[in-house]
Length: 592
Image 1 (cartoon, rainbow, N blue to C red):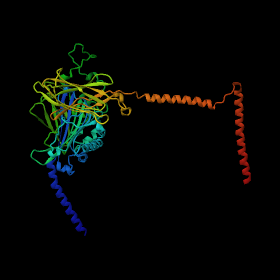
Image 2 (spheres, rainbow, N blue to C red; image 1 turned 180 degrees about the horizontal axis):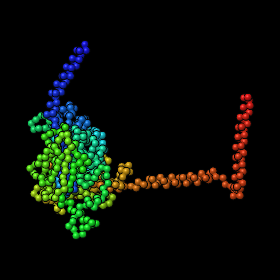
Image 3 (cartoon, rainbow, N blue to C red; image 1 turned 90 degrees about the horizontal axis):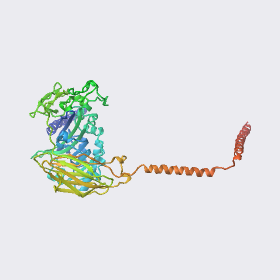
Image 4 (cartoon, rainbow, N blue to C red; image 1 turned 90 degrees about the vertical axis):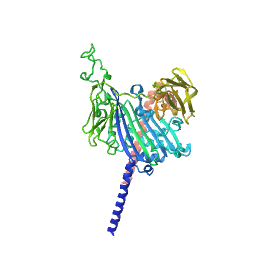
């Protein structure tokens, strides 16, 4: 009997193994994962590090919840909220386009300061889309330890001209897709957001380029951005679609600050022997040093000094056909790599990549060297800056300066403003000037006014900037007075205003966020009133109580009255004691 059961069990196990062996090659053929780190010098003392992780999974397998490279935690959230495309950004700092050139990835994976989220949700109506958007924000808030649940109706808009789907959607799906966009410019990005980000990766920060990601280094950067993009990808003429997830981390590191050891993070003056002085100066001496121009030579750095430790091999699940580490420096620049790494130089003369040994730590050393040539910085498509104008606590204005650096090509873009409800925009004050002359250059505009405590202001403008020209957009607004419960604890700091989004084709760049001061009441007054009222009540009560219970006697009788009162009290206590003593004694005598 037991032999037959064992035989049946063995046959079942063999059948399962055959099914798994047939399914695994299919999954491998339809799924892939690769990662790459790009290092680029922005300045002799600044380094841009771009981490890119990308994986594809079959859309059919995803719908059947057969997850391999795609993180299950995020996949189930997208399925539950009927989200067909997702874009999430965590950013801190300001990108200096004039000094650093074009943004990483051309600005396609950039977000505004704080947290920015936009997604295409499939729903039959706007109300159903709002409900699924609420589900999505609350679930992502728990997954990434962020305050995404605070993206309510006052911080949510439905862009009309600014964003286009990045993935391939069928025509039937596009009819039911709803685009929703929300921002949290006040959100502080920290290590709590980095840890869930790493858990979504196949190697989870234990191997490969993700092993270099350390919160102490990332959040000490001059500028940093984390992005997650999920979109469907379909080959032309093919019905087999894939779902692609791309995770990116970009950071601008200060080499001198990054070299400080973890156990000694406080910057201290260097010794005299380590100073780099310009010896050509006449006044140079043992106690006088003129700093040497840092732009004259490249800063030396070592990968383990910048990130705290060397790169720990390669991720076993990564595609072997893509070199995991690349560096953008001239080929004349000396670069030394660890043993076992194979270097590949491209034809441009400014980029080289390294194929790593899977089981060995990888190290890069760039010694100090005189600069003969530099890697060219890509020119941005548009320079943008935004600031407040005006004065006073009642009204103000916003000014956006947009410059087209190209000397030959005009640029058409969409300018999107998302303003809170307490910042009431006057549309009739909107003006556009080209090179100081007011002209009618607004091609198209969409405006949705704010409703108090229900929704914010949405303004989208399509503008064409001629070559080598500067456009200045200005408009006025009025400041609302909030209820005292609507002010944050640090009300005098001001209110964060989300950056403007500038969409050029499939690229979107952001301006800096703004800090709006509002009329703020003196929150110390309630405490002053409470203290003053309590003091008056205490003094009044004490005075009246004294008058009621105090006995007034003449001065010459006071001493005699006090002695008499003491005697009476002593006699009363003595009599009470004697009576209790006699009562107890008589009771004991009866018992005997």
